[in-house]
Image (cartoon, rainbow over all chains, first blue to last red; front, top):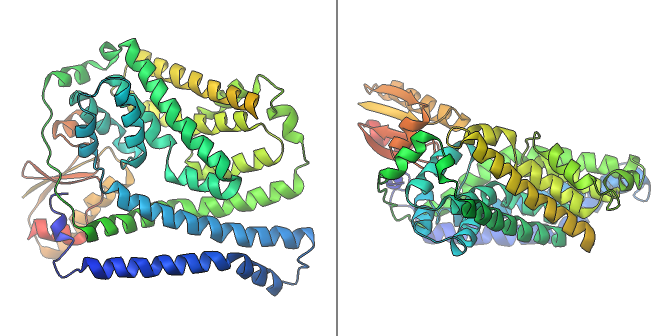
Length: 350
Length: 76
């Protein structure tokens, strides 16, 4: 961060950047509003009858793919800019010395906006714990960071609806706060790996966070756009195509029996099934959407999704370097119980 | 010049090593490049996000693949 000035020679004008981005936003809105008409026009170019099942499926595909990709592009860019304000060092400074409770709430919220990649989970974990952030507060951060992210929220919003997206956001955050708080109450600092415990005695190296010019923040947004969009777009297209096929060919109500609210065992089964599965939100949400469409209960599907994203085996293996097996078991137990509770609660309420 | 790239072997860490090697070959800068993968050594530099670049013992970059201009600046 300190050498960011190399990236930004002084000739770059923040006003020009802002103006260009504003123009881009206007163009985005104009295009987004015209999407239904454009997709209808595209379908008319094909020989299919728009009223036929194949024609309507194609119209759905032509509308949904650009819609979700456009939403994703906008949000990923905006989050990239927002995240440039929350370097991990900043998050650490905000969390150091917080008590449980307030600390858990703040950590879960910061988990959403701090840049996070699972290969950085261990240095981040140690950076937080060694700066005096309580273990439970650190866990709130580590649970929220992968689970509540903009890709999950945009895909849920675009494919399933804003209500489910809002519910996922709220309960994902709530789960991170409560599970972290419970882990903190258990007082498991002694269950860290010995070399990590030794580190706690030493003061962490103070890292300064250099002020970042506006243009560098815009660039961070563009970088995020390139990275995340480049990784996710193929999943979106495949997922929507698969969803369209399932809508057309899997009989209605097939999932009611297996994943409906009546089957009490479906929630634990969904959680158990989710643990060994490792995919990002982009891979799992089209499946979620298709399952919902065939009569699976919302709570069961949410539990599956949270389990896939928050309790992933590869991440456990990474965290094994700093956590003892007992501590990982407690982590899985507490988070798994929380996901179960969310699943049952939703199946009861809706 | 002694350059270390800190990272546990993710794609971005490899990209960082490749980039530094490529630019060093272009500019003819003499560097000793080392990849640090051991977690204890990485956190010893106080780094919270990888890949990170350490030059002569000082952390100059962290959290992303550096821009080519940045690498040129270091090697100049």
